[in-house]
Length: 248
Ligand SMILES: Nc1nc2c(ncn2[C@@H]2O[C@H](COP(=O)(O)OP(=O)(O)OP(=O)(O)O)[C@@H](O)[C@H]2O)c(=O)[nH]1
Ligand SMILES: [Mg+2]
Image (cartoon, rainbow, N blue to C red; front, side, top):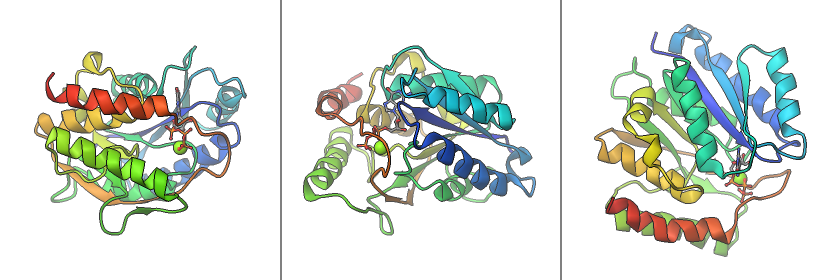
């Protein structure tokens, strides 16, 4: 018995993915909690920013069919950071014991949720407070990326690691599992970043607060369906925001 895990799935125009990702995640979490572990229950919370392609309506139908699924509708597209913070607040208010982040486009394999959760299980010896799905530790990687994308991503992690003085290898990834206490210790009001910098900022704040972080190897694959929302603006935000984190 150590608290319900909540998976937060941010969506913006993921109509081709949302149903499959919700079902696949719910299957994995149902298995992980079936023996009574993690309070024997779980939740999947879709946070949709008013997607014009109908993602939110599909999610509502899934929630009506399955008590473990919920939807948080937000009126405008504000970036992944604010969407996650809204999801985290909701999960904490409803008693989550663990809170997970995952992309909704199958870049992250829902099967890996079980390993991330196990890595922070309070009932397991030597578990950590925060587990990061990591591309840049042995056993992890990226499939189907060209050299430019690889360079930008790995360079972004190296740059952030250096500027912030952290030992974490993958700082920009968005596949994570927090123990509730970690999020409670982070003051959301002070979190300003929206894109990649958001992921760096949360991990940085967790380390600074003294929590134990572990990297779990994952293989990242490009989305198969739907449109990318990655932009140079988001990458540039990380360039200037990351040094500011250090001096705040
Ligand atoms: N609620 C919400 N979700 C978003 C927003 N921007 C991106 N997402 C979702 O966040 C997840 C990760 O997005 P990213 O990986 O940053 O962007 P992406 O469009 O998947 O880009 P690529 O990975 O490059 O294909 C996906 O599930 C997106 O649908 C946003 O502003 N609001
Ligand atoms: Mg993606």
